[in-house]
Length: 241
Image (cartoon, rainbow, N blue to C red):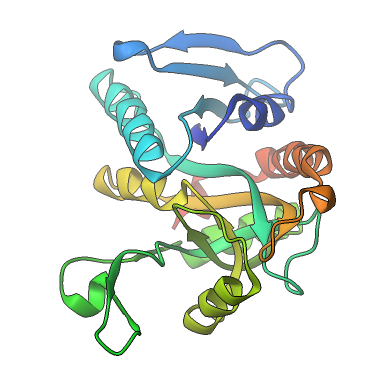
């Protein structure tokens, strides 16, 4: 089984590839996109191509689309895409050092302010969609394997820094468990290629007022490695529908 894993930065990529014993094999795609390829477990286990695509949904979409297209052209398409990394978690649902798994991947900022000070989402405006739903069986399998908390994972372009903004997001998306900055871009590319997609993140900080002293980035990266170590043995085509 071939799986494309898209992270933002090299530290997240390296946390994922740490599940394998041998060093990853570098695979360079047209345009310079660099994949780190590993095969956790035995020879029958999944192949993970891990890409550090850059920060934000645009970079994530471009990187994911490049990798998906290259795989399709060579006749070895991916069967699953995973948006992965660390994230801010919405307390109390997502604890520091814990893992979250997307039921839906949501772009809460896509839309327009209304004249009364409210917000109209892109789908309410009739211009597109703001969320991609993960197949139930896939979300359940990933959550059960990793011990992750399921819910909506929000893709923001500016990380939340106030209690007011956190409250606004949870009011509009009460099932939110975390926010990141790449998931919706990855999902857009995956959906365009008709490949199942799920978001898997480890929580490094609480969504709300920025307190860098409370961030647990190292612990979150360790948790991310552990999540992929538990996930890899259950990645089978049967869980994708």
